[in-house]
Image (cartoon, rainbow, N blue to C red; front, side, top):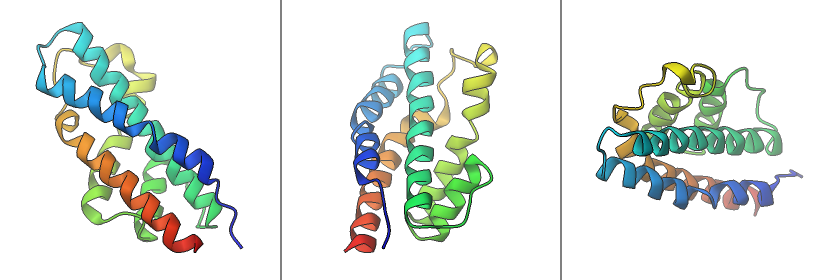
Length: 140
């Protein structure tokens, strides 16, 4: 029997609509200014934290192999068919932004719209749907 912390997974997935809305607004209203730059930066950062937290909960709960990196969390979840290849590719690109956003934030280009900002909201929403479906299928 698996112990999957569904409450914590749901808490994180429930944050996706606000993050997706912030990223969509930043992409649609982009003016190269500081406010949208910071909205984009925080939205990307929170998206990384959500997908890695949820991925880790799935790995722990369903006793998948141990992950060695943020990329590996995404690879393991993809190998276990939590989400399809097109989502996996975007999530890999996303998690590779963690170091620049969290550690090298002083060098982050806040004046440029990052290519993921416009496409990520739909991917995050698909990720939430896929995770919920995976948990439902595996638990019941």
